[in-house]
Length: 229
Picture 1 (cartoon, rainbow, N blue to C red):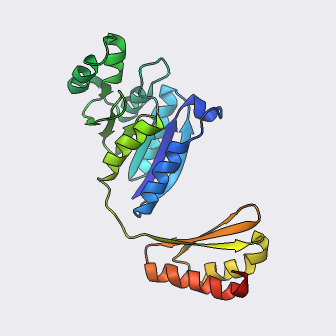
Picture 2: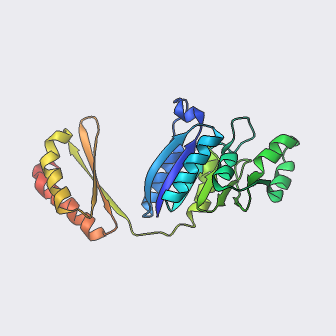
Picture 3: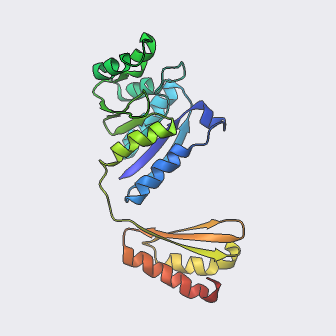
């Protein structure tokens, strides 16, 4: 599937918080053969959430949204999702009753338990706010531990596709392997090849759905580099 990840939070845009959630989700989906086509970071704003979610849900097979499911003034993600899908925001009675058992703050309980009409709840085992799925959109808490807890449950619903990956480390600079790299890219158009410069070395990553082709591309690259790898 072609997937978009939308991370909601002013703190992400200000650089106060590193967006580890998007990296975690993208890596997990890639490992089982799905394609993350876009990662979007947006503020805690109902209108912007609605606009981006609406567009993404139409362009991609599945959309994953994280952040903004708590009870504070800036937790407005569910409002944005409801607006995007033109659905009512309704109190989920099961979530409401559960939260009433751990908090007597009526406002907080009602806000957290309010989800777009028809949403399927995905329970959060390590926090208060549950995740949920509505249409082709999964919405999860932004706290990394809570996101991972709910995402692992959602991930089980994805078909596991063939996907293979190998890496080659080459000492030196990217410019020193450019000719060999371009030759392999030309010879293996069906293999995704990425070059990632580090301090003093380069990681070249080969990936694709055909294990034989991935391995042949790696072998060809090593052959061209000779003793340099």
